[in-house]
Image (cartoon, rainbow, N blue to C red):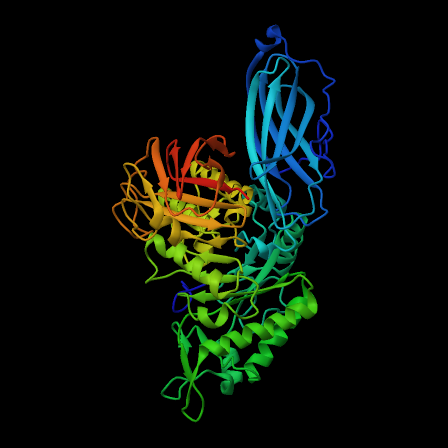
Length: 599
C-alpha cells in the first residue's frame, strides 16, 4: 500500500464447555422459551457472590452464510464462596424487531467458565443482528450483561470488514489465537500483506525464504494462516502489485518495462522496483496473470488483492506516444476478475485506488469492492464520508473500504474516524494481527491498541454489524437532504462543516432513515490526523427538529455505541405537517436516530 509509491520503508479453547448450547427455530415467532431446571439464587446464596463478570461474548466466525449455525461464545469470570444456580437470558433482534429470546440455566462456579449458545438464524442475506444477554440470579436480579452482534451474508464483499496480516515467519503457531482475536471485531477478510517471495515471482523452492526487504518468511506459515482464517469464517486475500518487478526480473526482461516521457524505464524507490507495462496483452500482463493462476492453483487464497502506487498516471510506448493508465488499470482488473472467477465461484478481486485515483475508471470495473487509500488532499473529517459516498455511487452500490492510516496513540481520532466511516456505510481496513491497528502504509509498521481503545473499537464494530441494514452499503445516502433540514437546539449541525459542529450523515431505505450525529463540538482542527487533546464536548439533552419530511413517521428511536446498552430506545416525537420534533437524550461521539416510516 502506498501513496505515490509504497512506503518502504479467550485464545478460544471453547470446546470444553460446561453446558451445551440452546438453539432457536427460525420458523416460529415468538419462539418457545426453555424453562430453567436449576434452582435460582436465594437471598442467602447471594451473599456468597463476590463478583460475576462477563469478560467476553462474540460469535465464532467473522460472518455466516445462509443456513449456517451461529455459535456465540461466552466467557464468565466468577468470584464466589460456592456454586450457585443462575440463568442466561439472550435476546436476538433485527433492528428494533425481536427475533428470538433464549433462556438457559447455568451453574456458576468459582473461576472462569466458557459457554456456547447455538442459534439457527433466518437465511435472509445480507442481514445484521444484535444480541443482548443478561445473566440473572435465581430471584431475577441482574448479575451481569453483555452485547454482541453477527451477520448473515452470501459473500464477505457484501459488508466487508477487511483486516490484515503481516507476520509469516517460520514457526509461527498462534494462528487460531490470532483469528479468535480478530473475530471479536467481526473481521471477515484478511489481506496477507507482503507474503510473497518477489513481486514478479510469488513462489520459490526455498523454504523459508527472504522477501525483497530481507524479512524471513515461510509458505507453510502462510498456508496455516489461510486454513485458520477459513475455520473462523474469514476470507484470505493475497497482496499483489499490478506493475512492480524486481531489478533482477527487469534485467532479464528489459522490454517489459513501462517507459517515461524520456523513453527510459520508470523506477520506484532507490532502484528498488521497476514499473512494468500492464497494458492488455503485454508480455508483463501475461506473465503476472500466469503468476495469479499459480497462486490460485497452489494455495487456498480466496482471490487477488491488487495494489498500485498512484503514480505515474500517464506512460509512454516505445514510439514516444503517451497513453492513459486509468483504462489500463480497469482492464487489468477485469482480466484478473475473470481469472479469479474461473478458479473460485465466490472469489474476489480488490484493487487499491491510491489517492482515490482512478476511481472513475476502476469503481465501475469488475472489482468486487471499491477500495480507496486515503491521502492528501482528502485530509478533512468530511472527506472520509465523501469518498465513501462517491465510491458507492460510481461502483453502482458496491461496498467501499477505506485504507486511512492513523496511529493508535490518537485514540480520539481513531474513534471519530470509525464513527464517520461506519455511519457512511463504509468499511475501514485497520485491524490485524493481535490488537494491531494500521499506522503506516507499510503494514508491518502497525501500532498496538490500548486495552481501552480496543474495547471502544469492538463496540463500534458490533454497532456497525448490528445496524448494517440501516447503515450498510445496500442503503442510500441522504446526507444532503437531512443536513440542510435538521436543527439542533444549542449545537450547529452540518455535513460539510468539519470543526466545532455536529456532523450529519444520513442513510436511507424504503422502510427507515438512519440520521447519524457525529460529535465534532470543540474539535478545532478539520483534519482527521490532527491530534485531539480532549474528547468532543458532550451534548446534553436537546431538541432536534427535522423539516421537509414528506412521509408519515411511525416511530423514532435512538442508539449509540457509546452507551452500555447499544439497543434502540424509543423517543417521543411530534409531527406537524412536514416537521418532526423530538428530544435527543445526549451525544458523546456517535448517536444514530432511526426514523421508521409509516405506510
